[in-house]
Amino acid sequence: MGAGWWVLALAGLTLAALPGYGCGGTSDSGGGPAGAGGTSSGTGGVGGSSAGGSGGYPSGGSGGGVGLDVSLPDSPSDALSCPDGGVPGDPGCACGKLEFSIDTQQSCAISILPGFQVDGEGFINVGGQNHRVFAMDRWGKGHVIAWCDSTRLPQLLAAFNVTGYLGQTKTPPKVLAFGDEYLCKPGGIIDNPLPAELSYEGKDLPAKYKGNAALLAQEWDVVVFCGFRIPWTNDWSKELGEFVSVHGKGLLAVMDYQGVVTQADFTNMSKITSPAGLQFDPLSLAWAPSSTSVSIECVPDLPPPIK
Image (cartoon, rainbow, N blue to C red):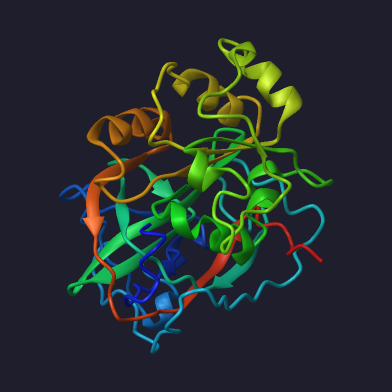
């Protein structure tokens, strides 16, 4: 985060997928200590599980941290049908290659809960240790992404077809955003803008959606939730969980470093994402003077890039 501190060095992001599953998931080796996040093996972040390995390589860094290196091939039109637990290569279960790079600022970390696997995960290296700051996965009938640096949310949304992956629609998805107003509302940061197509609904979801995930799914394809600096008046874990896992929609859960994000924020957001095996850890990861590439060879349900 730290929107005013652009002159400091930034940390690079490395993504990995596990080839042993035919690109069907990565895992957390027994959980590990909170925030450790594991490491990824292989050069350039290609391949390897989150347990063991060197965790990618530095590639010099871009300085400003705003450049993106995006490379996505077209996926077949019927690629959006891989069920949760399905492995690419199964009938009707296709995948696409994902490559991009994002320089992060201060961030939290994400743990994969024991017994869960994810389709893709990303790490930053701080002080010689790798910390997971990105995870993407199928969740029931839908899809979820967890992201630990809200200031770089515009960069994440521009890096690949994030809302297309989450919404899984053949038309542009309808995207609702709520939570922290500064970082989740288009226009909050003038020199690092969010896409205008995000419809910001306030610090809380409209009351009409309480107990009515079906209505939320009827009106929206994707929810982007910045879960901090809000009153947490309502517990949306049931509605958002059903929105994704039952109704086949998408959730982008966005957090930031401990400090601006409180322990209560981490606990409440993790209550939403933990049924998908994702836990946000209360860390404040400093910036580091390195930048690494992002490469996932095979992500299930990855749509083609926006033309």
